[in-house]
Image 1 (cartoon, rainbow, N blue to C red):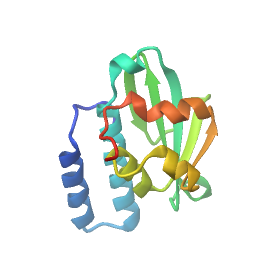
Image 2: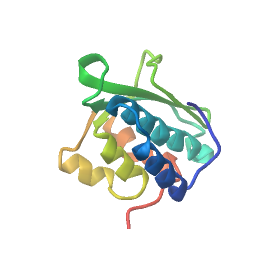
Image 3: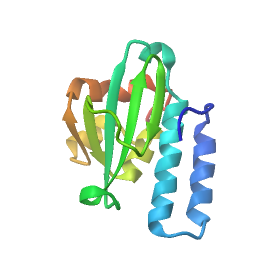
Image 4: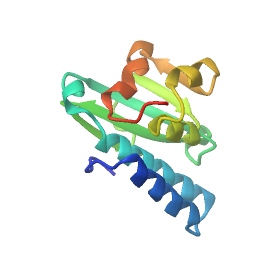
Length: 145
């Protein structure tokens, strides 16, 4: 799960629909859903906006099977490229974001804004708040509307 060609919102919704119908365990479904969401993010990076960025972001999702009951993903934006994965390799993270997988899906499809999720306590941020506030601006994602 790393950089891929871009996919549209319709493609993401179709992929999520397929995942919802596959007979696997809830943990496997959750992993497949998160993998699909992060693949979308990596594919939708705007290289021009991210050319000067060098940052690692840790994403934590409560209710998972990893340490402390969290599923974790690492996103590295460097030199106009975005890589994502479940292995936490970067020793220094600029920010750690904690939220529900459904809220991440809403952010990526324009169904929610980071400000509303932050104000309502549905997203927690540790680290560089200013960077986190502009993080989604590095990606070509639908706007809430």
